[in-house]
Length: 118
Image (cartoon, rainbow, N blue to C red; front, side):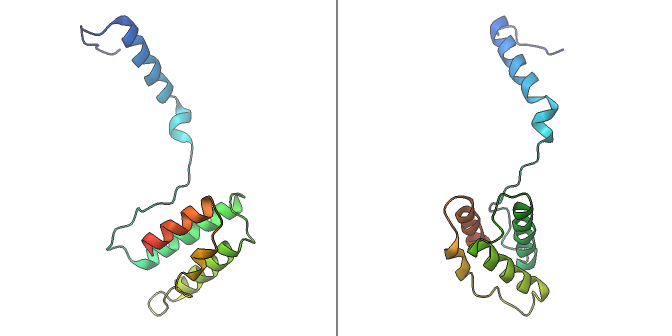
């Protein structure tokens, strides 16, 4: 199956094989995880970035991770919707002031990512 170097011990071979078998199980590569982070280039249009944040905020609300009535979320969704309806003519308004409404935890992490990206 695998060609091991002659200098490795049978014990280390078994440890590596066990670790590989665990990672190669289908559960490791089929779990979906939503992440938000600085994944945008400076050349990416703001409309693409805003759309990505909007879509992910909606998803996190639908699955119950974010509270739909959160002041941060309500303001963020409203601002992003307004911007996406006419991205060439609108600036994100109010100019990201709502980011200060983020509560501790995931909301503040999302707000930090939005500050960096938008």
